[in-house]
Length: 116
Image (cartoon, rainbow, N blue to C red; front, top):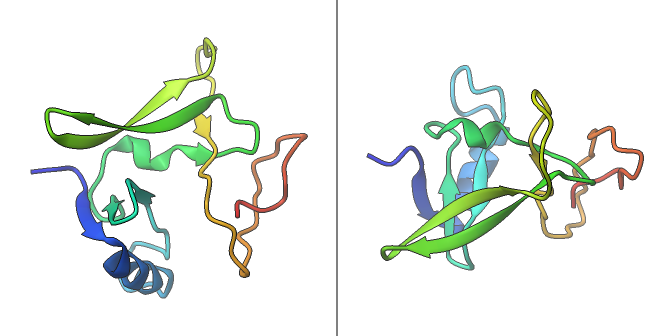
C-alpha cells in the first residue's frame, strides 16, 4: 500500500476544509497535501512518510520535483547544496496566491511573511 492517498483536486479542497475544522481526532487541524499536477493531489495527512513534515522556508535549502518513473509520478526532494549534519531540510511550498493569506514563520531574514 502507498504511504499516501492520491485524490482529485476537488476532493482535496473538501478534505482540506475537513482537516482544518479538526475532522480527524488527534490530527489537530494540520494538513499534509502535495499537488502533483492539475488533477492529482497526494494526501499524506493520515498516512505518509516523514517527508510530509519538511517545513516551508522563503530561502530554502532544497526543492521538490515531480518525476515519472515506471509510469508512476513521484515527489523527489533535492538539496540545492551540500547540507550540514543536523541541518533542517526545507523547501518553498509554492502555494498559489490566494486572498486568504497563510502566515509564514520560517525565520529567514528574507521571509516574505506569507506562504501564498
